[in-house]
Length: 149
Image 1 (cartoon, rainbow, N blue to C red):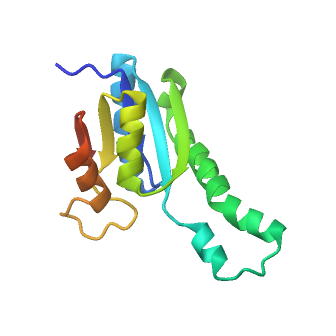
Image 2: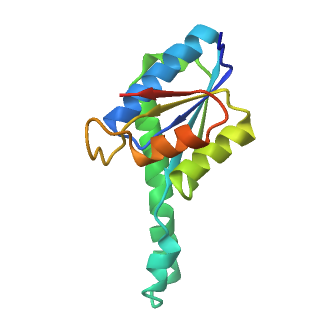
């Protein structure tokens, strides 16, 4: 029987991700496991800034930092929704890259033994299809994956 000690929860701050996080927190509380909450920024600001090379250094720094600052603030807001956070050890991380690749890499690096991921994300293209990120995580994961809806 699976008794997870390290649970990875990727988030895009959608209602679907809230449900995945809630499920992960319940599991973590039950098994005294640690939760790793991960948000991946997929936008490449360097490419966008390269289109307009005349930006001031201060504006470039502000544009580059905005998604990071916003993500960190959104993580705080998301965690504040759940009372279980006081009973579970939680580590948060924001990184940039291709979402499913970063999720799989984080799982490998941290020795994750369960990934809890929403079957749909912010795009929510269709109610009955598994989202592209979740599908790729499911295909590439070496540990169990719990899909939530």
